[in-house]
Length: 631
Image 1: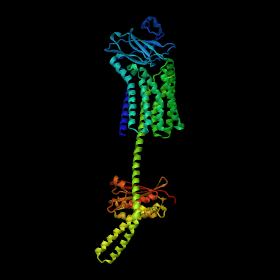
Image 2: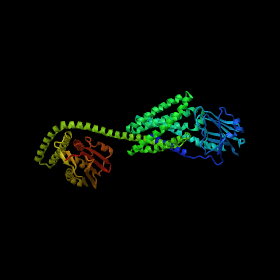
Image 3: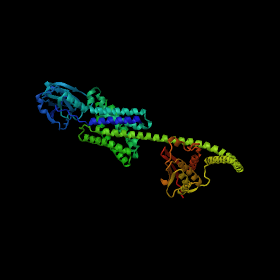
């Protein structure tokens, strides 16, 4: 469990660091120049020509745009366009231009009429973040950007920046690397959770495995949407792009699987049914993904269908989970309250962004959903960790109960052996003792020597003590009450108090009694008093100066009579406490331990229980419970 606690602490620190990183606002610096205006022209030909584009005869075809304008709607049968802007005059040591949020699949950049950048993709990823070095000679030059795509959108969404390369590089890295860091952190967390399988019981397999897949799928989606990854690992771009599809197919089924492992099947088995539906939809989507590689027509069909299915899955799935969480919260489910906080943030942002994506005719980049991920994942991990810790505490509790049951079993076996021995021996021993006692009395009366009379008296006392031990043996062997009646507990305790108060006073203590009325139990009066007298006498003998014994009797849960005997005597340690009731264990010099053995048996026959709690130097408390009898 310490390893789990350390891992959770590390996880929270890692996620907190990632969230701080995401929250950091980066600035390009004061030496940068912003290009707020540019022009765009649609290209009908399949083979772009920078010479024709740069010629003055095309001047009337250029349309002006600013960063506040939306992307233009691409005409039908047009797949490419040109974009141009003029570099400002600059006097920089290492000039560079940063072009971000450039929407296109294939990009070629010319400065003047010289090709300085080229990127071609065989998959429909349209995000581009480009940092280009400039020379002093390129100041005031015109930049031409050729854009080509199979989607409905082409253009530039953000102003290009011109400045020192080191400054722009830092701004570029701060902007792009945070997505990579967040995705990598979540990927690490999912793999770390998988390692927990080695240390955890199979009981947690469903919850932990589904949580791993949830985090893994989210990390794949974040990494696949990061332009930095596509730029740095362009040779694996196709694989990286379709990681989003794999992650989106795994997300909702694993999320519902996790909810099912925590909250069960839900009302009308709705969680289980929706989870099965999600599994079918995801399996079909993955099959269609691989089939889409065989032809461009299937690829286009797959893209259009999966966009709709993913959006509907997110909206309806999150909506359903949110309704169920509210229902569980109204039932005062603590786990639902915890997860609702994290999930509510994530679901609200996710649904809002998906809706806004469709409102803008799918011309919107979903970025804010990443903020909700952290709170959501932390709540999921916290729920699972809380469940593991609760189960661990339950196992510890069961282990302690098992230890108690084993001790009780061993004690019962010992009691049974002693009971059989006592039943067979006690009768045979008592008769000779009584005969011996009679002869000793006769001899004591006939002798005239005071010394001999003293010896005879001492021998008789020891014989009487042996007879009492035999009586205890017989009581222990056959504790059944010959005649049982309905006993008034308050009345019986008052009689016991009258008997034991003088003994307590001689020991320097007092007895305080607090008795409720209408307390009735089924039992034998003499045996009941014998059991309580044994317990109270032990308390009296444990008292020091100014000792107090408190006897309380009350009703618990309307059907149980509780008798509590508490003293402030010398108390016992844990080892001594465990030995109470065992044969021949006693803290008294001449004690045999049979008194408490008999007490345990009497209470057992009366269908009651007794529990001792004690602390060395503080005192001891005996808690006896009997079923309430009807008068």
